[in-house]
Image 1 (tube, helix red, strand yellow):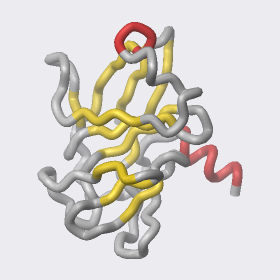
Image 2 (spheres, rainbow, N blue to C red):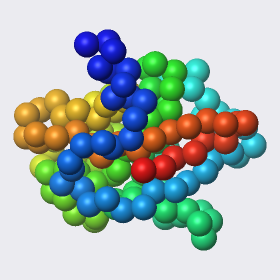
Image 3 (cartoon, helix red, strand yellow):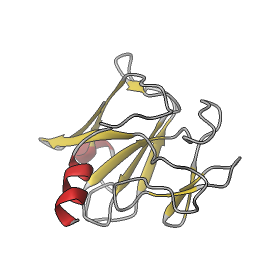
Image 4 (cartoon, one colour):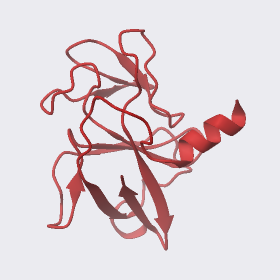
Length: 140
């Protein structure tokens, strides 16, 4: 099971999702722009619903970026798979991302995005996170 979790956490969304596949391309200079947002500060998060630059792409509903309990970055689409609408976005409530409409909770700080209440049958859409020279790159 540990190997499966590691492989799932390292990859982007390689599964069928009810959330449409929209382009994701954002780069965050962690050292210069977000010095508090380092992996050692676990359970921190940021959301992006619009690009900061012309080249930024933020997926279907926006991007949720977290520093996980494993001291790695993880990124998810903000759209709830149950509702599958761009205007209904999950928000953070403690250890979970919660849909304001259906109430589904998704774990996010373990990097998987699995549902926890049983309403949804799929996880949040995940995106790939890679850090290179202090820049966090998020892609699909």
